[in-house]
Image (cartoon, rainbow, N blue to C red):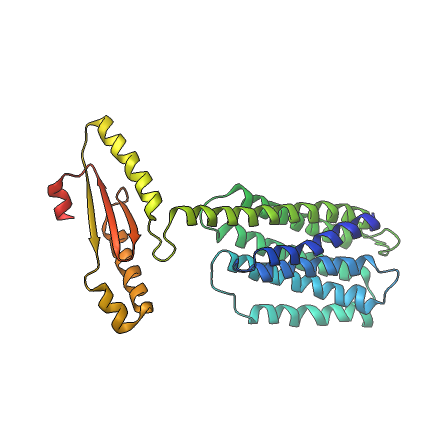
Length: 313
């Protein structure tokens, strides 16, 4: 079990830099991958208890896992497009956790107390990452809920282990198989395999969404691009023909757009395009289609709208 867990964690930790270098522009992917790798490194240090000193297998290992989950939390939050978390909650967590860990390592070598402390903190951080994954993502996704479910199940196991260890009269030691070590190793095998799979699926899902967005949207304004707009317009034309209804098509551009670019620069021109696009999207109905044809030219399609209604719009 030690060997299998070590191999699994090694592969899990080694996958994270690959994920980062494949998609370095994805928001939060650096922190997320670094957090995963730190967790893997921490578990590898714990599994080396028979060969390395306590400073590495307890203090450094627990600190690495704690820092890993904090980075995972920050990475998932940025992956969602949300603002970064402030630094003080993480500093407070480390400030409270490390002195207690050092006390139960050197002042009073209590393996059971360290196990309980580790499990409780691990469970809380896992639940926080799961919460970030489920509440902050826009829209519903089975992949995202699967990732959260893996973390929630891990947190429940950690809490169960903490409760059982706290109830033991003679909890035993780590290397002797006490403190539910065998069960924890089996759980770690399932956890890291499931987490790495869910991580990869979430990354693939994000890339798929971005590719679909690029195929449908104008990258500057967020409006429909020319190709996708024309496809939807053709679909609306066919629908109107079947239903015997009418629709209107309006073309528009920004007056003196070249003067804006020449006088104030292309950054101001881009701002003008985005401002007009936002106004169009907010003023028109949900059923209306707005697309950017290129430059400062836009097209608006108004379903079930005669020319008189189009003029009012």
